[in-house]
Length: 323
Image 1 (cartoon, rainbow, N blue to C red):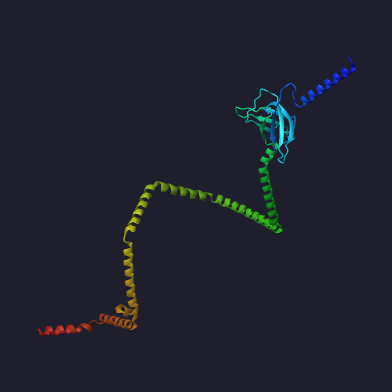
Image 2 (cartoon, rainbow, N blue to C red; image 1 turned 135 degrees about the vertical axis):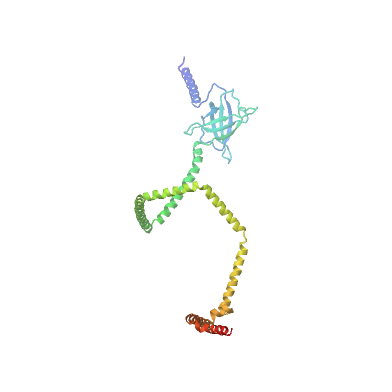
């Protein structure tokens, strides 16, 4: 065999091996019939060619081409293949770009819909993009970030107020206040000690008082029926007083007091015998003089009764002589 023929055969084999290896490394199978599908995205979130295509977690193909569509929309068309001929993709299915791991590797996950019709090779599927882990973390952390910023702002305001308030004068006043508080606590401690001493000294007396209180309580308990009757009687008396004609009695008393006041006023003005007797000094002196003379007369009658009785006796004697 010629040397040129051998060389040609080797070149062809090398090219075939290169094509096979290149397709193998890119996930392509040259022995399987592939179907091609399309999906249009406004953001592919880092998807690249050769990224796998999954259905229910099973790899069924790979991304073959990514290109920017002409125009100002900025939409991106992704071309991917499906190697399994037996896989039927319903019309309402969605090609969603999803994350494969925490490192951010991307893939296309076909979410199978429910329909009686199926996509054919060359059709364009619905598209969607799964929220990335970074975006999800940012979405969860954003409220915490806002709260932390608000808290930091509040702490900063508090620190400003504290620095403004806690000047030298305030610190000095606080020191004085703490010193006064310490003295007060010491005084309270001494007072408590004295109180304990007094209580200890008067313990027997306190016990006696408590015993008396207990005795009084027992008496109340033992005489509960009598106390109830007394309270009932007091209630009856109160009801009787409430039902009595107190107003009429008070009016009569007021009238009697008014009349007595009228009499006293007349006496003070010197009206009537009592008024003249009290207010007329001349009448009082005459009465006093008459009383004194009457007293002298009585004394004289007791001392010299013959002065007042001999006329009667003489008259009696003459009458007897005449008889």
